[in-house]
Length: 171
Ligand SMILES: O=P(O)(O)OP(=O)(O)OP(=O)(O)OC[C@H]1O[C@@H](n2cnc3c(O)ncnc32)[C@H](O)[C@@H]1O
Ligand SMILES: [Mg+2]
Image (tube, rainbow, N blue to C red; front, side, top):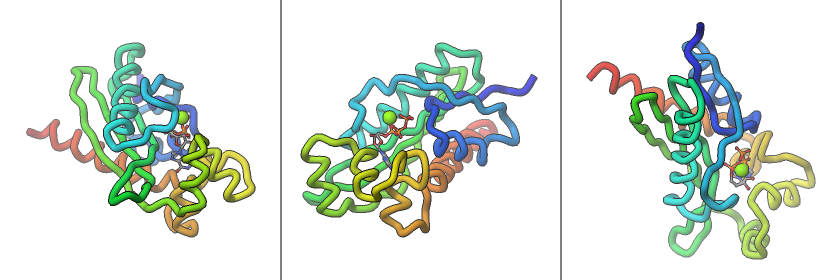
């Protein structure tokens, strides 16, 4: 039987990114897992915690050899709001690997709607007049004119997680 890697999400953009990086060596299973933080994390700390919580939940609840949490959020820097993303890979033995993703400033029109209490996913749908932006190119795709999609951004995070995990195995 293939080794199982559980991803704490049913979002196709997240699952595709994990398949791309870990799919050769693991059977990838996407299942929703509670982040244990706000549905719209508002700092690096909270976003990272959401990723860790999702992964820890799945390593405890499943027979997976590895569990991976990916979390999107926003954070403040120099009075501006930025998109941020974190990934956490947790092993059966309880080891935790962390990696942070790309950050870009959020335009004022987006910030205004976030301050009204909307989630970034909802704001991006209003902004683009489309549905489910978060499952497609994501905020990062919209803000970078399609040069980096949400899935590609998570691929980068997953590669950083995979690399750290591999390094650990060879120590
Ligand atoms: O189903 P899950 O795995 O929860 O996936 P999600 O799309 O809701 O993503 P997160 O929970 O990781 O993100 C937290 C919130 O931030 C929003 N968000 C984060 N990154 C985004 C992106 O690149 N594009 C659109 N929305 C994003 C998302 O819609 C949520 O409201
Ligand atoms: Mg969510």
